[in-house]
Length: 194
Image (tube, rainbow, N blue to C red; front, side, top):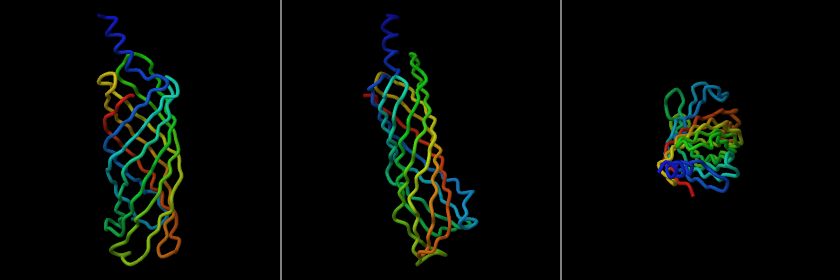
C-alpha cells in the first residue's frame, strides 16, 4: 500500500512532454507612478479571464504562453476619467520547476518577453473629442507561481507576473511622451495536466 501511495504521489511531479493548461481570473494592476506624460495621469486595474499553457521541455524546464480575454482600462487624470483603452498582453516565458519530489506543491519561477497591443482607445471628459493613440509595447517579464496537485491531472494555481509595459501617448497626433504602465498581474485558477 505504501508503494502504491508513493507511485501516485510521484505522478504529481512534472515530466518532459507534459502539457499543463491553467485558466483563472487575471487582474492587471498598472503602476504609473513613473509616467512622464502628465502628472496625475493613471491607468486603472481590470480583471479578465486568463489562460496559460505550459509545455514541459524537461522535468524541470517549461515554456509557457500566457493569454487572456482583452483587458479594458479606464484612464484617469487626478481621479477623473478622461479615456479608456483595451489591450492584449501575450507573454512567452521560460519556467524553472525546482522540485521533482512527490510533493503536491510545485513552485516555479519564470522570465520572458511580453508584447502588448493597445486598441479601442477612446476619450471623454477633459479629452472628449480628441483622438487618443497608445503605441504597442515590447518588454521583459518575471514570474512566480505555484501549482497544488489535487490528483494526477487536476491542480489549483496561483501566479504573479511583473511586466515592463511602456507606451508612447499621442493626442490628436501630438506626441505627449512616454507612459510606463509596468503592471503587476495576479492570476488564481485551476489547471489540468495532459
